[in-house]
Image (cartoon, rainbow, N blue to C red):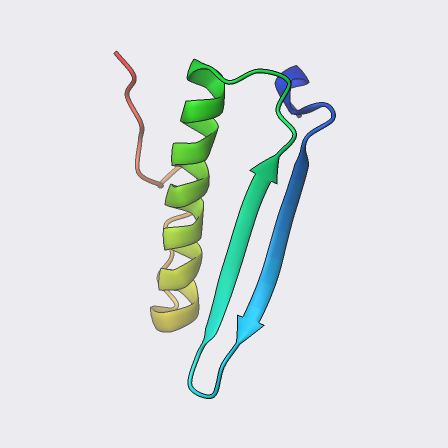
Length: 72
């Protein structure tokens, strides 16, 4: 676990309706915002989109085959 994650909270909440279930996600309590937090936020989005694909089509894109994020 990255040191910057110490003290943070990762939370997945399921919100069910009649026809679908929403996954509400948060990663909170960061000590400071910055480039690493932005990178993690983007990578969480990549992970959640892969999870959606895996559930819907059985074809997710887990690491290391996920979408690469270049911050250069």
